[in-house]
Image 1 (cartoon, rainbow, N blue to C red):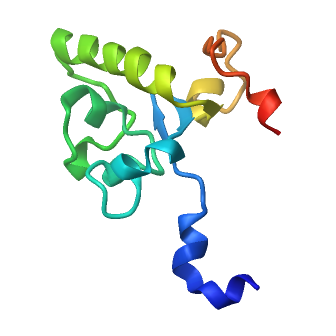
Image 2: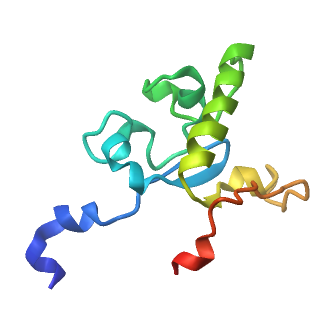
Length: 124
């Protein structure tokens, strides 16, 4: 039956994920911001920490790398991370950088983010 709708509507039904600070959020409910053709679609499908910190959609900034960010940009990053992403969108996972060390061994300091206002278990 799915074939009748063609690839576009199948894509429409796919969840939209993006990562900030190694935390993967399901931003599907913010389709008007993150969906195809939407203003922040460039952030989707990758860890865009630097872009979020700099309020930049420049492809060079769509990376996890926060080297050289200013104090202000880092503060802005934390504000947006806590007050937008963690407040509005459920966490669905973590990037490998967040849970593994560079050599691939488990990062023993890893702690999941606390998100008490979402109880994902009830949704399934």
